[in-house]
Length: 144
Image (cartoon, rainbow, N blue to C red; front, side, top):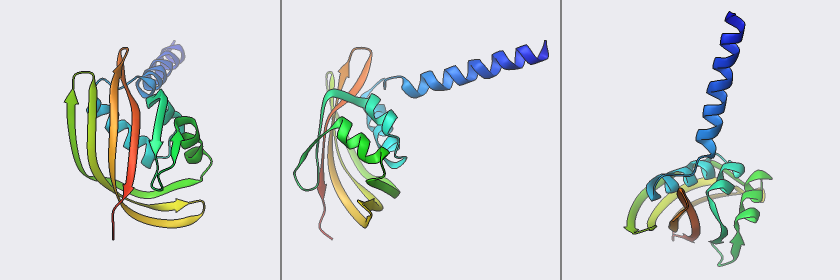
């Protein structure tokens, strides 16, 4: 009896954790927070759940990168973060859209080469169905 009760409890907690991790953000601020958590934790699977189907990243060098490619770079170790933190954020809401501009510091490796950057970003979130998704992000390197 105790074993079946314990098993049910473990399954309930596991399914709750899984559901929480795969639930869409409830607002633009949570959407932004979950993106940076997924980015710094190199959680490609979580990141893909946050991207709109037509997500586009404008990278440091001006290239357009789709969500699947970006997530795969994290998953395959092309982009690795050792540290990272948002240092400034200004989120504005416009109905079903949120635009966050800010800065973040990060250290890690890109294609095996170390980097240490201060970056400005613009992140666009939109309400989609019952949650929020990221439509676009642009990263710009700040001068040293």
